[in-house]
Amino acid sequence: MKFLAISDTHGKHTSLRLPEADMIIHAGDISGRGNRSEILYFLEWFESLPYRYKLFIAGNHDFYFEKNSDAEIFKLIPDSIIYLNDTGIELEGIHIWGSPITPWFNNWAFNRNRGMDIRTHWDMIPAETDILVTHGPPLGKLDQVAGGLHTGCADLLQRVEEVQPAFHIFGHIHEGYGLIKEGNTSYINASVLNERYSLENAPVIFEYNKTEL
Image (cartoon, rainbow, N blue to C red; front, top):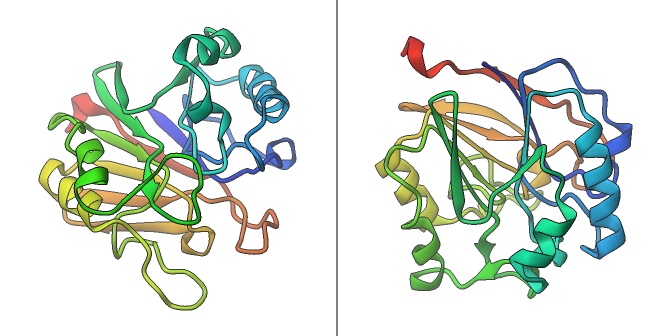
């Protein structure tokens, strides 16, 4: 199956040039301020895309998803779109898990304190996960900001190294865009905007077929 990964569109999604794929995954920050109108704007566009599967998680800018109940959220989301929030799905034998959680910084959406608070979310990631989608990166993996600091989550890294998914997709740190493979896991920072919030980076394409492994 061919996958297309994007993240951190911040309302600029309609300017993207998207290649063909079977599934598109958005790793959060679909909006700028996280209000209802921005969310609807994104969902209308996302629903219109010609992919077999369309999946997304929220990010730290997407306050609507943290402030509203699941009932309200799912009233907005079309049936053709998959939304994950510390939940998973199996598609064509591939296990995908998604979480919007990021380490605490300036009281954004889905922030959790490092340590026990955030670890409770990472402990939920199933051992059979093939593709992990989180908004933020694990420590030391495409997580370096312009000043040189590595801002990823150490507890997330520990869980990823335990689970060893084939792919870990994230964004959040715009400067970290790229792909690296370490051990059994390919890490993808799919942020399409740079640190100045300009559209600079191309969507990331990869293939994964569980039955061929």
